[in-house]
Length: 258
Image (cartoon, rainbow, N blue to C red):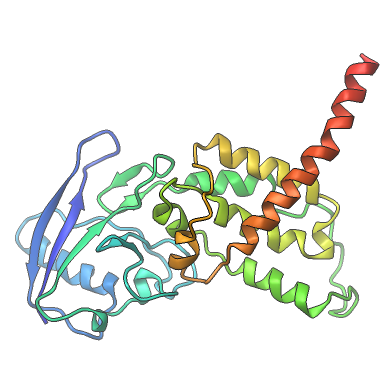
């Protein structure tokens, strides 16, 4: 199988980048896209050319490390599939593929197809956790949770933080990611004590990282490899609005006391 790759090459964050063209006839339809890049890199190194840099880890669609644009679509043409799970069977022999990194100011390019997604880590650190001591393990049925709520929480928790939602959004919004992280804790009993504070901290951190505002276009949901829905953005907005209203009397009382 022969493929032509047009790949974004950029030596570092501050340097300019450009698309470079490569051809390879050593591809197999059963390869994943990352395996195809492995083969291409072996060919490039054999010619004394610097290999293409891309991020990866588990290669099983779990870790969220991999991810780049393929022909203008985050993770490529196959829905609910990460780049590492996307096989070359979805492309035609002789096809030309355009590979680019996530495009967002909050995701600066480190090198080639690899971007810095540490902004997501800082959003999680702002409140994506439960700090109440859990104690010793409880019986599975000690806390009764309605199945509908448990299912919604599990669906939200499926987010792997790959960043495709940001890359696909015209505003480079991180609302789907942040909404999923707020939802999967806020829907469970263990997450209730910090629900308001969590929403305030995580949304404010998201805004502080320079992500754009959600325009309800739905591109994020369309490219999400785990099928995270816009419902989570609505829940995040509701939690943030409620928390903001509840916060105002406290600040006013503190000013009166002063």
